[in-house]
Length: 67
Image (cartoon, rainbow, N blue to C red; front, side, top):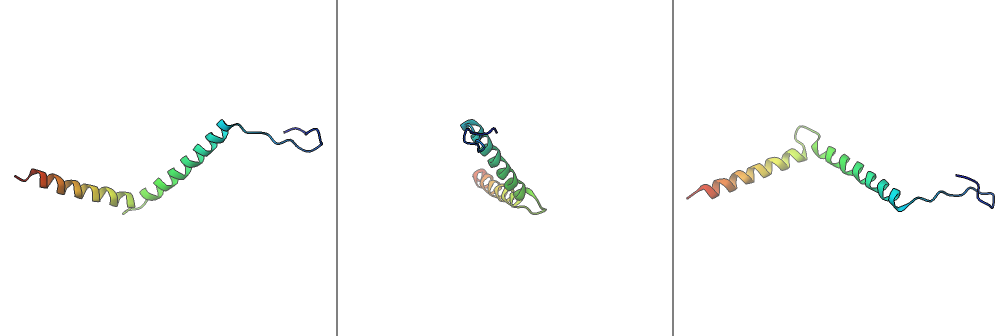
């Protein structure tokens, strides 16, 4: 940053591309932290979700296979 003609400091302008890149990085960090929070633990929410899907799929395939 350099000095402005009036003696103050001039603010550096950011381009739309760099602002978009920063917001994308921020969203990536937040989504990563949420995914990590869902996956941590012995009986995590993600593990429960996959277990429920497996149970429903097993019930579906059993019902379809019946004559």
